Amino acid sequence: MTWYDAPLLGAGADHLYLTVKKRRTIMTKRNRMLISRLGMDAHWRGSIVVAKALRDAGMEIIYGGNQMPEKIVDVAIQEDVDIIGLSSLSGNHMILAPEVIERLRSRGINDIRVVFGGTVPPDDVPRLKEAGIAEVFGPGTSLKKIVRYFRDQGYL
Ligand code: B12
View 1 (cartoon, rainbow, N blue to C red):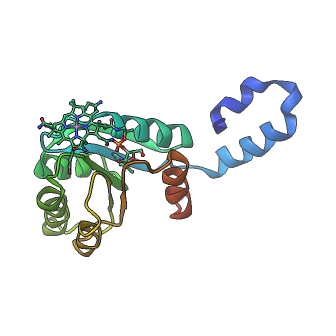
View 2 (view 1 turned 135 degrees about the horizontal axis):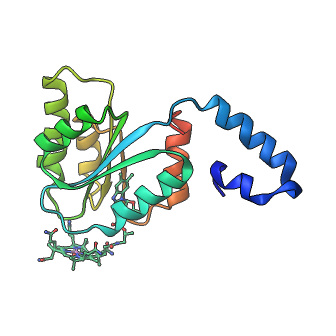
């Protein structure tokens, strides 16, 4: 259940409603996240389920569909996002994901966290992290674990 469902529970859930109401007051700003599939990657399912899970957890999601790094960075700036979530299962991650970081840095942006989800050979994970990707979520990662990551990092 999400915080905005709580009022629907009615009088029987006063305690929960008040807890939730307090939290809503504290939450003055919802964090914004752009989720995009890298390049021509056709695998949409993972990015969509992750987008919905994070939206339900309280994140504001902008779903960018398929984009090249330059466009991803343009949209991230225009939409003033806090996080970029890249998704790719088609093997283009070592070229396009670091390019997103380079383009952010070349525009003087250091405060947008970039995470990656998709199929990545184990050896590429440390290389992506060295390039500036904050976290990598492979196939089979539970949605609960992904939501917990953003909660632990203070975005939810
Ligand atoms: C379905 C599928 C397709 C469908 C995709 C349609 C769709 N529904 O999305 C179609 C038929 C189009 C397809 C095409 C291709 N596919 Co395909 N496909 C798959 C398959 C069987 C399942 C993918 C899937 O939907 N998984 C379910 C979702 C829920 O999981 P997920 O996407 O992995 O997402 C999870 C994580 O990765 C992560 N995550 C993903 N995105 C994001 C984003 C964020 C922000 C975060 C936080 C997390 C996150 O969290 C999700 C939840 O756990 C996989 C095999 C597999 N078991 O992974 C092959 C697979 C990915 N495909 C593969 C290949 C090779 C291709 C093709 C190149 C084949 C070809 N020669 O044409 C093309 C790619 C074309 C292109 N332009 O991209 C390979 C990739 C190999 C590699 N990269 O090393 C795989 C692994 C199959 C294999 N074993 O060879 N494919």
